[in-house]
Each structure stands twice: as C-alpha cells, then as structure tokens.
Length: 149
Image (tube, rainbow, N blue to C red; front, side):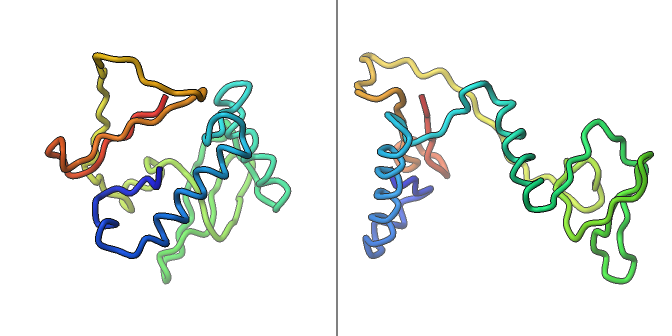
C-alpha cells in the first residue's frame, strides 16, 4: 500500500511508510471504494480538467496548431516560446511531446511490460479495485511489478 519501489524501506524508520499507507487509506475513504480516481466519462476528462485548471491560472492550450518554430534563447539555451500560424506565444516553460525537441532529449531505454496473470484462485476483494504487487526480490527483477484492477 505504501508503493515503495524497492525493499530499502525495511531498514529505515517506519514514519514515511506509515504516512504513505495513511494517504492510501484516506484516499479510499474520500473517493469511494477505491483509492484511485477514475474519470466518469472517459479518459478525455483528464486533459479537459487540466485545461480548465490551467485557464484559471493563465495557461493557454494550443490544440491542433502546428508549431513552425521553437524559440530557444541562444545565450541561456532556455525555452522562450513558439511560432505558429496564429502568431508567437511566449512562456517561461513548455510542456510538449519530446519530438518537438529531439536534440534536447535522450531515450532512457525504458520498456513497457504487458503480461497476462493466470491465477489458480480469484483475487479476494470487497472493493471495486484491487492491487497486486509482485516483489522484485521474489521474481528476480530490478523493480516490483504493480498490477491494478
């Protein structure tokens, strides 16, 4: 429930683990039978909610607007804005797909692992969701595997 990525917590004080477990438990109490928040009307609700909150704080979304040029300050090598057919948009930061900045990113070599788990028994749960954790030291892997239902 604390979602540690390795077993180092076993040799450390328990307070941080306790706090993480309490966050999990209070999330269950707040959001119904599951500690996870699922969008009620599909995954499109996630960017829509982000766009609304961004607008409240002065952010601007530029959807379906091809970027003609990414503006980078030559002296500081920092992002300054973008040029589009609509004009120039300046901002102190940008959140964008890495393909816009191929010279500024590098592949980390992470892999997505998909698996089908065949169990010899049902997963017992009284909730709408469940989480199964396969500890890395028991399956000879670098990290734990988390399975969420």
